Image 1 (tube, helix red, strand yellow):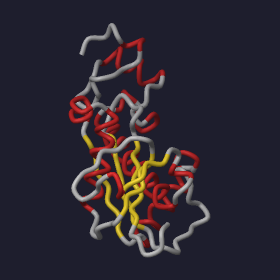
Image 2: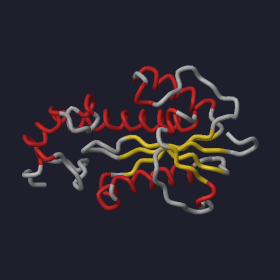
Image 3: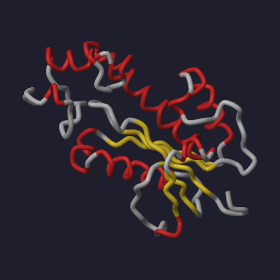
Image 4: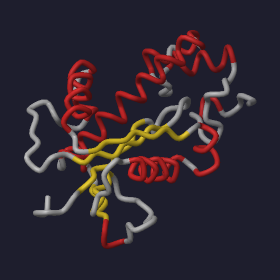
Length: 196
């Protein structure tokens, strides 16, 4: 972190699933923030993520989470839907950052954030605390939403697979078809003959 610069870390969760929104988050942490559990959210247990979500929401200088619907994903494609989600999350922050740290290698300038006011960082969630914090929020909010949707569509097992292309999920699509929460723009080869 550059001294005096207000940095927001940005990350997303849910690029790979067949169903559900992609969630993105933006987080501005205090300069001296540290928590021993904070890491890439995929390397944490669900319990650790839940603990950290409470800590981040309580101690961050600002945070925001944004969902991008399956319809938008199908229109934009998953990469640009993820970028759009991060942009929206930044715009929802209660404090305006000077600089954005983006997990991954692709982003689009928007508003006041030109090429000189953001950096893309591959594996940024394992490098920068603010990106790791954003990954925790995006992941926990998305898992929460998929668990909520699973109550409406229990046959797909979204409370267990969170919309990812597991055998259980693919089998359910074959048997019951697609729901309004499924993304139509990509699917595994074994589902290619399936009609939408």
